[in-house]
Length: 370
Image (cartoon, rainbow, N blue to C red; front, side, top):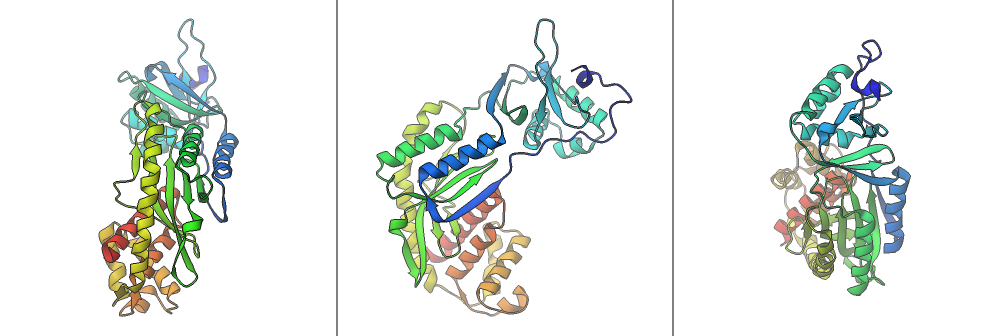
């Protein structure tokens, strides 16, 4: 441990210390949907593969030091006060390092590029500036998150057990199926009711349901969000603004969550069912100039790259040749096709960006077909 606190001058390389990678992010769609129990098992299996979960409560981060035993990996270790066990060094993952820098008000991208000695000096000085209680969330011997001591853990295992119970009590357990699962820094289960799917066009079935979202790393609140899901292309769309959506931060009494989830489930399913009517109407809402329509998506928060990607998807889906800009100019389309182009682009994004794009698509659909 001495190497962490007072490195030998010639032993510490000039190269920056590096954080360990975060838990790998995956999004899996299922043409044959899973039962809720099987989907929940996939989430928990991913956690077990990532490393044993445990928490370390810290009264004050000033009692810890930043450095490296192997001269390569960013690590935290307890300062060896008399009569206090130092314990093993804990490697920092990328997300945890960013959270640590946030707590000491240091720019993580800048610190990550400094030579190792300067990294250690800057972070350790920052740690001494004020008393900072914290909660370390570990996977094995790696710190996956550094959170506030006020953080109330609603971890996936407890939350999914709670949701399963609420689905059963609400009468959905036999009909509900999981169409998609996301694991990693963000957890999402996309639950639909296949028996209530609606064909908005011949052979084009859309199901309604909910997303159960969570993050154990402080990235996302506990969420229940109305969604629709188009089977032919596995495109999903999330309600961008909803009175029935549940958003609950990880602060306060975790025991209150069960009652809130129980009440939120049937309301969210009902609102998602209502969105099927938006899809029906969108089929008959004509677009005179597809290029102008795609460019208008900037008003819904899409950036230039996303607008170009949506244009490309729309051109390909419409069987048009040439670049998206040339092909779409003056071409007719429908609100249905434009909305699906947005959600098609979302499929190629990471979980957080994907969900944001799906909500932008719903905002567009609501404005143009509502």
